[in-house]
Image (cartoon, rainbow, N blue to C red; front, side):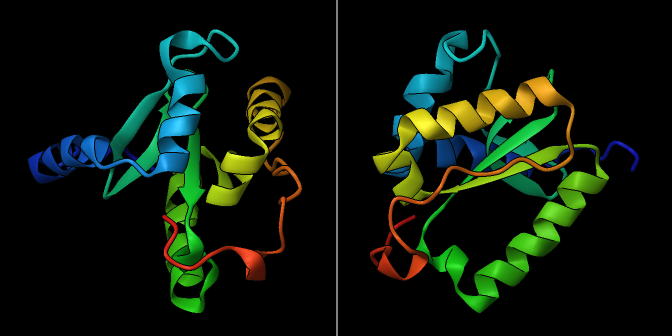
Length: 141
């Protein structure tokens, strides 16, 4: 898929989103920033084409998304599937974790991210969720 320029409005919205990160995003960012994880550089709230991804590692073309409860409902799942398809068609690897994964199993999330940067595989397992999706409190994310 050819490179698409990022519209100025997306860049501006990305700046706004960096100021409004969820607690789970902030928690993961504290582990990703300043090359703390595998000496990899991550950017947060990064515009990629028509989307703004939560975290992006340009050198590995790795997208990390942190999902609140709305992502586990039919409209959110459908939107995520379209988004992930576009990101993958653009040559990126996409990892998704729930807010609950990050807050209760940060070490497992970091292990899964490192595994994704080392293997060259197309799909990577997320850590086992701490609670079933139905137990994720409403309003997260």
